Image 1 (cartoon, rainbow, N blue to C red):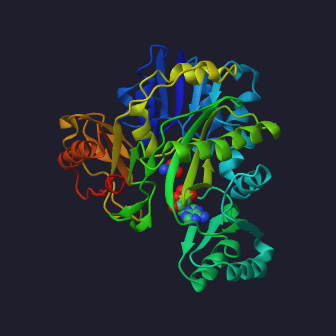
Image 2: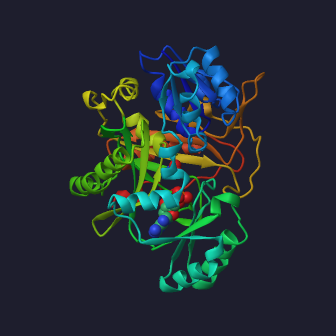
Amino acid sequence: MNVLLLGSGGREHALAWKLSQSPLTTQLYIAPGNPGTLLTGINLPIDISDFDAVKNSCLQYNIQMMIVGPEEPLVKGIIDYFEADPRLRHIHLIGPGSKGAQLEGSKDFAKAFMGRHHIPTARYKTFTGDEFEEAKAYLYEMQAPYVLKADGLAAGKGVLICDNISEACFELESLLIKKRFGNSCSKVIIEEFLQGRELSLFVVTDGSNWKLLPEAKDYKRIGDGDKGPNTGGMGAVSPVSFADEKLMQKVIDRIVVPTIEGLKQENIPYKGFIFIGLIEVQGEPFVIEYNVRLGDPETESVMPRITSDLMPVLLSLKDNTLHEQTLTFDPAYALTIVLVSAGYPGDYPKGIEIFGLDQAKGVVVFHAGTKMDKKSEAIFTAGGRVLCITGMGSDIESARRICYDNARSIDFLGKTYRSDIGLDLMK
Ligand code: AMP
Ligand code: GLY
């Protein structure tokens, strides 16, 4: 069948890489894709926030399945748009409608949902712009560090963690009063800070059955030792040693099952991926956030560990037969290092030539922010997150070795990466 995948990052390259290996994929299209996805299918240069353009491509290329990579089109209702058009009804859609996408599109909705279904999460309160004084008073009831969250999507910048009360009040004002993220912060969540180890969990569901993909750990800060500003992720590892059977059973019983049951009870149809951001506090799991798509860069570590075909799993979501499917995983460790541009996550240059890609050995290199010169076929940087290098090994040490060998030999001016991905999980 013909498949269309929406998105253009490392996550989409990893998904495209996996889907293109399936005998069930006749032709894979990626919109807009990147120079890496060109190796797996055909890139369609369309703006995926233009739903009419996506529709026209689906009709033109006889698409039978569409997978939505990033959250934005989901939150903006691309699934509802497709479902409302009789000419698109035959297309099998992977991703929730706008109702389900609220789990990521509104943190207040997600927190209230967890409350209704007794899913463990940090204590919180939500405030609107005319409740600034009440919000401030609530901050004074909490203890440092203070966690403030814009309700809506804010390109990964909507969570602020403040070390002291004056900084927290300043940030509260910038969100609630000055509307730093526009409508996305017309509501602000203030919540208790949870100290623990973070874990990314990926659930695939047809709305009643569910299966787990391999878990992963993301490294969010720019610098070694988790120092410096937050980024879109500097690396990932899968599996995660502390996600042992005991913890995972608690996660399933207290979080995964109540989430799927909660969606069902609330008549929210959901076919697609749920990314549950977890934190383990003294052996007990709590939900930090839901995302309604796969994670980046976790997908770049997770996909290479899936040894079975992913296409039948995705197809089974259509008629709610996910329970009849089997997913198998490679027990080996997958490690991903993200090479970023100098200056990222702040300002960075673009258009710098990348060398050594053709000499990559023993790893898969997923493209994120790259561009290809059509004439010379040379590859240039085109974003902050440039390349994701995934290597595998029987232990973290060997996966690290192969990744870092390649991270050194693939080169561009200003290349920046963390040197400690996976180290904390080796102890
Ligand atoms: P984001 O992916 O932008 O939503 O970033 C959220 C990050 O903020 C999480 O990965 C955590 O590291 C941190 N975070 C969010 N909420 C809390 C919390 N209640 N306690 C501790 N850390 C948090
Ligand atoms: N890795 C975190 C995210 O995809 O949001």
